[in-house]
Length: 119
Image 1 (cartoon, helix red, strand yellow):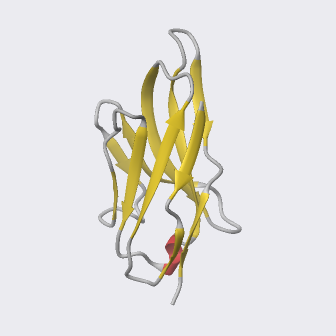
Image 2 (cartoon, rainbow, N blue to C red; image 1 turned 45 degrees about the horizontal axis):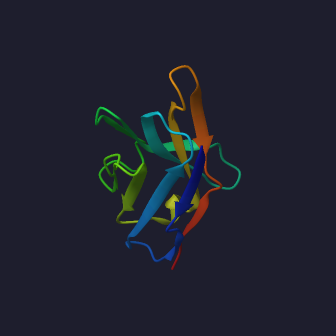
């Protein structure tokens, strides 16, 4: 299973960006997809995840500012980011989990997309 992110870039504080994540390959069933980020010198942290049943989980620092979309039928998910702050600057990674077959699971990561928030 391959995961590809897009939509990163540079934005001023208070601005907005939308990230997109697309998966492809042998996908029998999706468990969930989500976003994580890693800033220089820091550990990777949860941004937002969405499971197949519709449930979500958000990192405390983005709650109320970021919104993860539902899992689309074409195995994509989007992350709408508003009121961006300099501390949101990081590489954002998409993660996808599911089944390639009845017995074979997958846990795939994308290469990451850079988000820079600066005036």
